[in-house]
Amino acid sequence: MSQDLSLRSLLGVTLLPQNEARILMAHVLDKHYQLPRSTLLSRDHMELNTQALEDWKAFEFKRLQGEPIAYLIGKRGFYSIELQVAPGVLIPRPETELLVEIGLRELKRIEKETAIPKVLDLGTGSGAIALAVAYETPSAIITATDQSSEALVIATANAETLGLAARVQFVQGSWYEALREQTLFDLILSNPPYIANDDPHLSQGDLRFEPISALTDRDSGLTCLEAIIQGALEHLKPMALIAVEHGFDQSEVVVSLMKGAGFHNIRSHQDLAGHHRVVSGQKLG
Ligand SMILES: C[S@@+](CC[C@H](N)C(=O)[O-])C[C@H]1O[C@@H](n2cnc3c(N)ncnc32)[C@H](O)[C@@H]1O
Image (tube, rainbow, N blue to C red):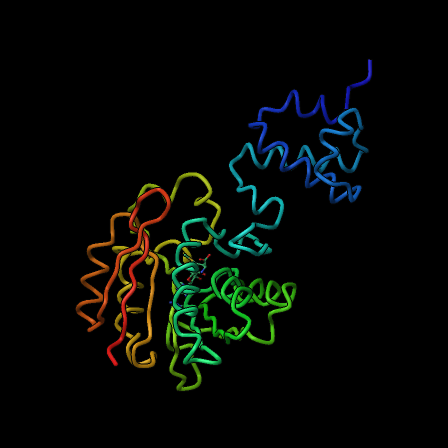
């Protein structure tokens, strides 16, 4: 008797959780047949051809080995945009949307006095923060940096796909060293590597597949945050804001780093789960 290769049967026997299996199968349907996800319901008797079946089995196997879904399907939604992602960049996280929200609120606050706000995103990865801010604020000009050339290739491709390349400039280098011009910014945003080198999470889940240089400073988890906060004053306009994402247990120390660097109006922001994940501070006038 021949094997039943219908969508219903393949999804029925998979060892993957159904929600994950459906995302991967929808990707196979799109890639091989340009069919929408609703096909999973409306044509669940449809049989996959040989190539599509091979692809499905490869995705299923890789996911069972722990590879992140975003890398398998090559994309991830973030804030109001969709980003191409690949193993060279961190997969953008929902937590980071809080940082974008704080940035957008600040841009709204200064919009009357600042016609063309200048924003700096340090450690841009896929371009997530820079591109979400650029997409939501058509007047803004963004400089986005990263040390990783692989990340910048992906971020540049994302900027082009989203039609934002004219307003987002990508530069390579370590934190502020990447900046070639003496520009003063209206806003600095950063989600740097903040996981401590000995944190066991680094060898668990999706993190095992992500670039280690995007996750940890190979030290206490605080060295990148420290470098970014300490260097910020000389790159900000008077009264301008910096906001940085940090680990769920780093809020107090990041607040003291901001105080030590001379920032005012220092605030700790909570995500939807009630965890303190972002600290912001303002340069004095
Ligand atoms: C946690 S990831 C954040 C990526 C992206 N901003 C996001 O939120 O999805 C940190 C990023 O900082 C970059 N990075 C690490 N060390 C750096 C350095 N010294 N200078 C600039 N970028 C660095 C990594 O390559 C990585 O892309």
